[in-house]
Length: 348
Ligand SMILES: NC(=O)c1ccc[n+]([C@@H]2O[C@H](COP(=O)([O-])OP(=O)(O)OC[C@H]3O[C@@H](n4cnc5c(N)ncnc54)[C@H](OP(=O)(O)O)[C@@H]3O)[C@@H](O)[C@H]2O)c1
Image (cartoon, rainbow, N blue to C red; front, top):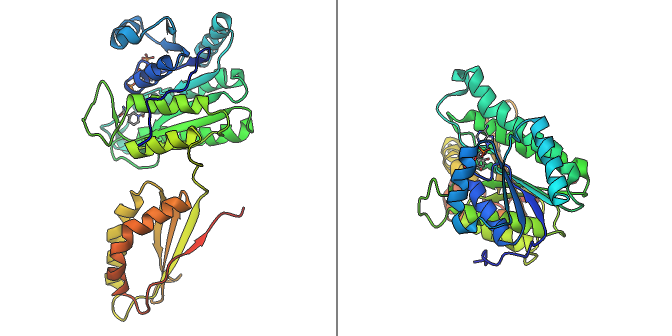
């Protein structure tokens, strides 16, 4: 396991953490303070400021700058950025764990205030902070968004969260293309997190401090370009730290695996059933981006085509190992012995 306690020294670095008072934000703030950075935490209410100072206890050193300020509007975020420049002389990094969970209605049941609160308000707060701070970051500074894996996994009854977080992931991609390497834009995509508000005790969940350690490592890793980093388990957090600390190369690019399967006589439906049964397990694999099964256009008989897309060749290798015990089951339903999939990588 990677040593997530070994935080790099970020003394003198000025970091702003809007949303820092929240459950995940606490771990981020603690980690940057432990790394020696000056940490600005804006919060919209005095009560929240006082509560957060109590939560931090002794960790609230002189390097914590807790300010009551509404950073969620364009004007408010701009004022905060100007104030930070005036008081601290600039800003080096931003981490934005803004917003929390929303649940309880299917999309056709939402009303306008749900839409404004769970989508428009949160998305606007992120854009406000981004447009105020990103242009002010020093070259190679890190801008780190924090979102949940619901950005790419639909959660019935929480659709507004999925939609808003998916929009933020696209925002990261657009901004990364627009800054063209001047700053580094990261997104940490979280699974369930152990926080002061929800601690399952499950050692496989990442803790808020581990999320903070990865954000700190992103700030410190000037040589690593912006990335979308998945932190859905301790193992993924350890891997992210290893990559950001330069101990392991970043995983290579995406891979498409295409397999053609000719069903045995009368076994087409059985084969489709097995492939459908495997779909949830394969789609839930950490590196799996896509899994679909196709028949010849127009229907009827003929081979089935299985198309899978993986985040990297390593993710494909892990997938192959995890489905190896299913191969005999599938082979028994094929007209010809199964062949390894053909692998493709992007050209354009
Ligand atoms: N907690 C988890 O297990 C978990 C899991 C997966 C993903 N995430 C993601 O991590 C991020 C932070 O989640 P969290 O659990 O830390 O949330 P949280 O405890 O609710 O904290 C979010 C913070 O965002 C700020 N905020 C600004 N505008 C807001 C608005 N319109 N509504 C609500 N909060 C607003 C609040 O700070 P002030 O009131 O002080 O301004 C609040 O403290 C979110 O993107 C979430 O999806 C969390």
